Amino acid sequence: MKKGTFLLAVCLFLFVGCKQNKSVELGPNPFITHMYTADPSAHVWEDGRLYIYASHDIAPPRGCDLMDRYHVFSTDDMVNWTDHGEILNSSQVPWGRPEGGFMWAPDCAYKAGIYYFFFPHPSGTDWNHTWKVGVATSTKPASDFKVQGYIEGLGDDTFAMIDPCVFTDDDGQTYFYYGGGGRCAGARLKDNMMELAEPLTFMEGLVDFHEATWVHKKDGKYYLSYSDNHKEGGNRMNYAISDHPLGPWEYKGIYMEPTGCDTNHGSIVEYKGEWYAFYHNMALSGQGNLRSICVDKLYYNPDGTIQLVNQTH
Image (cartoon, rainbow, N blue to C red; front, side):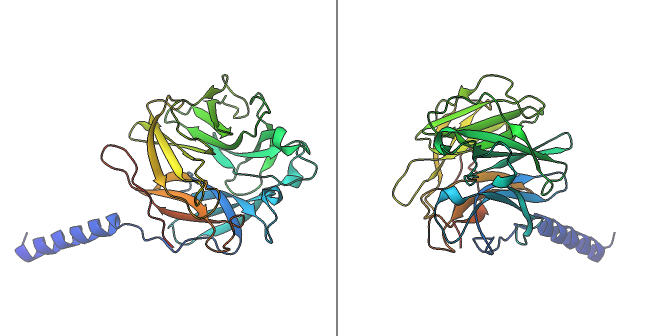
């Protein structure tokens, strides 16, 4: 090979390599601006797109009791987002609270060709003591969901246990988590995704747990993230690490400071080789009960701990 040809080949190789490894530049936050959204649950499905399952704040605001529907958004470049529209509302829940409302933070899972959408919703007028976790299914990731029922045997009614999180491990076993009132619990799910395979276990080792459970896995370690009870400026996002999906957990600290809302609810996902932290803030409205979903990059230290997320605008 001639020297000039060799140099040209080397330059072309370096150019292509740099192009492939170029870090994705995110758009401005919030990234959904035509409606108010909260509690983003992020997943990457088999079609290669990243999907966000979000709850919906209704304007003008009255409170969390008006949250009564869910939307889905997706992207393939982390900049341009598709709104797939509403996938479920309280009027479509046969066993739901007659007055509707109270469709809080959801999650979604995929198994054997079916998408399972998990959502908290009360079954009675006395909403705080009648919470259930409903399950709706579809063969599509962002439409045609039908309510199938709710998960039985989720415990007592002394305090709202909400914010379902569903994590599927590398071996195909799926785990269910939820929490509230300082308690976080989890258990394996049966293959039908509608029943617990064992009694709930309360997660040990968490510090100042409030709500918003999320579980992900990296380099063989399990990460449980959640919001705390911090008052000044709102909840912070904390995390703990374990060698087992049900703990016990080793608390590691805070990965996100308050966002300005009274609450925060986050999810963590890897997409195309980079890690992202999803959350919500009140930048669009200036009101804590009219929230908007955001995303920023998330970085790990060599020892597996998470760096504090830089919230961008």
